[in-house]
Image: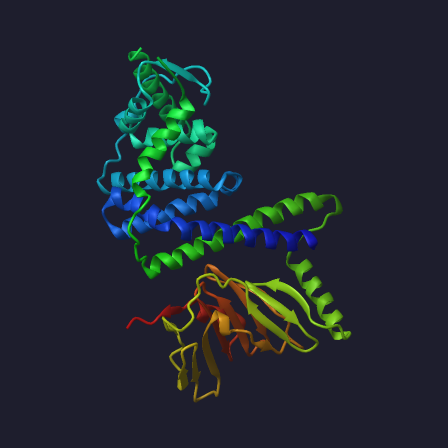
Length: 181
Length: 232
């Protein structure tokens, strides 16, 4: 009985936290979605869909700091918006970014270091030229330490595709950094 | 030569990508969206409650204890017996409400008041009112809407009440009919009554809606599911 009562309180607290987080950043999320969809109704739907995915995978979300939660949801909103845009434009064919090369061997570590002549700004600009889907998958894997299974659920893709996107993004960055040596 | 980690690169790229949204203009979200978001947060509460209950079930497996309907009914009976024996109010949560149980009645309070309207902004109606019922009485204020229908031939009545959440704290006579949790579409609520008259009350996210009808339980719940916003 006490456990049940506590769980009600805990649920209520987390629900309020999630609602407050949404209230704080809803315009930002809408802005992200609108910049990709250029349609207010679809942008609102993308924000809803992103939060549905958060609600479906709450464990990771509630372990994150507020800053990381923001990054996490920004990534999902962006991904859902691009996905919606592609679907609207019947661009359902397998993207060139997903075709591929073999998955890079070895474990990918956030501490993986590159010694390069490229400046941090150049590297950042290069990462921003990568397809959105690869960037989000890599960010979730490397920085937010989500597994491929979690990434696949949140991004609505297969586990294999999640693995491929992370691998392709990492390979592109590595090649760019090493090419600048 | 620079030395940089993959993590540093991806964070910097992410923050650079999204920094352009630091000062976005305020967007006026549609009501449809606001309602959907409330449902999502409610869904979270339900889902985690389910997951937690599942964990509690597993922890309790040794004692073969289960939070099923029977258990809840037995607990409610115990609560009522305790109340009948002269205790003061017993408080528990049911169907999205906090309930204060007294010896002969129960007072309800909505739990979730987040972002709820402070006046009637949208009026709900029963889209599937039985054809043999006609309007008997209607009363509209800033905080509530009351409508009563009657079947002239049989004398049966249906009342439909819509209230802002902060003004809703009714006492129900639960001496003979204890409250039970019911589902009304995606919402949960409470119901009580006998075979001939049943009352359903639920929080639809924005308002509290209540239907009391000279109808069986299932028909009253179906009537509740048919509530829609009246378009101007």
